[in-house]
Image: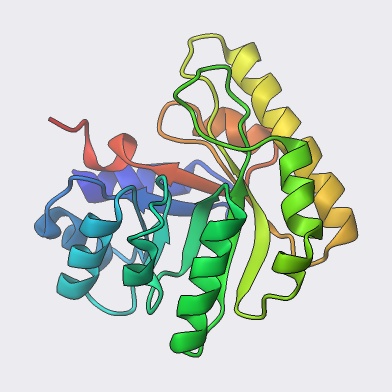
Length: 216
């Protein structure tokens, strides 16, 4: 049924929207089922879990780190992570850059912007994002590249509220995109609100429950 859920979502969204299958807490067998159906982009919230799954699953999977970063664990994903969605601190970019140099690769990243009112939702402000992008520290890094933004909307039944938050993120994205042609990803929308996010400009959605079913 997981595969059926994936195909149903794919058939109802524009072809330019990339689906990240959020496999947090899901067993290897369930991930492999989705992989065998052609899915290659998977997202994890915790570095320990991400590392273990990377060891156990096919190496052509594109792993996305979508959860909060811990400075002391970033080194474990430097050799394989495809895209880091949750950059909030310049020091995390410094660690990623150091690890990327070791492995002779460039790690692509997104800045996580806080668009929800909920205190538990992470992210930085528009002004803090500007400070990172304009900082000499970041501009001198050669092995990390910020290529877009990520945001998580308020968990709400109020579709207008969700829409307003996504529109705000899209507005910021376009401001940055005008000045930087490498900006091409806006990661917004999850199982409960991805249709709203796509209408507001998202080109990458992070889907867990709507593919795998609800977690225990």
